[in-house]
Length: 188
Image (tube, rainbow, N blue to C red; front, side):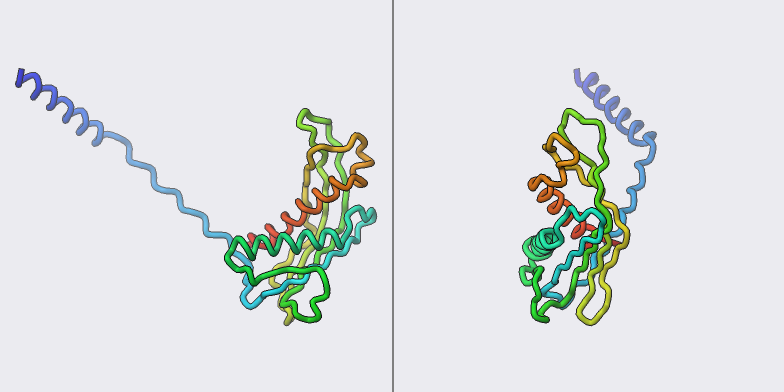
C-alpha cells in the first residue's frame, strides 16, 4: 500500500514538474498608457462661463447652457476632487474670476435616423469652439470646431418639434455641458 502511495506521489510530482517546465512563458505585461494630462488650474478659484450661440438656428439658449457648464465645472472640480474652493459662475464676477471659459456654438442640427425600439432620437450634432483663458491672458485649454453627437431618449413625435421640447433642450444642455467639461479636463 505504501508503494502505491509513493508511486502516485512521484507521478504527481513528475506531472507538475514537466507541466511547469514545458509551459510557454507567461506573456509580458502590456505597458500602461500614461495618465491623461489635465489642465493646470493652480491659483484658479473662480471661472466665469460665457456662451454665445452663433449658429444660424439659435436652438440652444446661451445663458441656460452657460449655467449648465458652470454647474458641471463646479461639480467636476470642486466636490469630486476635494477642491470645493474651485467654482464657476455665469454672471459678471466684478473682476473676481481667475479664468474665463468662452464657448461658441457654431452649428446645431438633427440627423433623422430610422426609429428604433429604444425610442432614442438623434443624433443631435452640436458644433462648438471653446477656450479657457486665465486672467493674465494665458490660454489654458482650447478646442476649435468640435462636433458633439448627442442622443436623447423619449423623443417627441415630430422631429421638427424636438428643438421646441423643453425636456429635450434641457437634456441637450446637460449632456453638452458635460461633454465640454470632460474634454477640457481630460484633454491632452
